Length: 115
Length: 107
Image 1 (cartoon, rainbow over the protein chains, first blue to last red):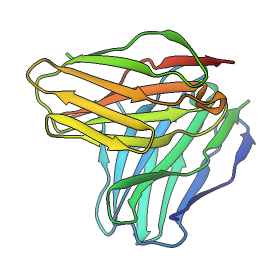
Image 2 (image 1 turned 30 degrees about the horizontal axis):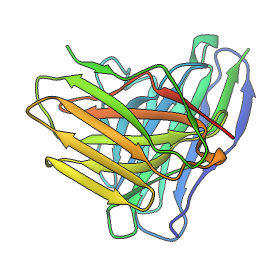
Image 3 (image 1 turned 180 degrees about the vertical axis):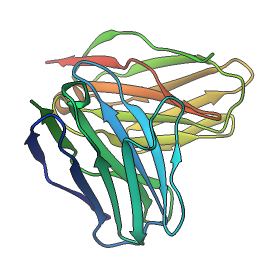
């Protein structure tokens, strides 16, 4: 079946640094990918919709200059958390619609810890 | 604003049927999603309803009534591995998630 991978699975960084998270669709092409964030013991939150070859669409309240999204190919989207701070520590998850377009596949997530 | 309401916790017995309800109040509607999420893991997609009615997929079914702002997820022949959180999400201009229902399946 369709698979979405994320890299890295876990990252620890110092406050003020930038972190890039990759999301790949391994056996299908994804013109649209989604980025979510989940804080401990909270529900999911959709951050943005990543569109291949065009600008991402951000949800209300998500800073586009802080969370940079690039969808340069049909199999790769990246999320860069710029100037990360401890409050950005979270579980970041990507997904894409695959197969016949009727199933949404999630990556395994990336746990970001900002010290 | 948008409200997505679902029960916080439910308990059911292995082999039984459980129904998890979700009610929503949104200014628009472009679809309702159900996801399963085991503790510490990324979610998995269960269903997407945009039209009224029942969608069946194996042991899982999802129902939608747009006029009532209501959906439910039905899990049949419960297995221990179904113990997880179940998230209801609604899309209009934004995507909003309910807080999730933590289901515990007991032997």
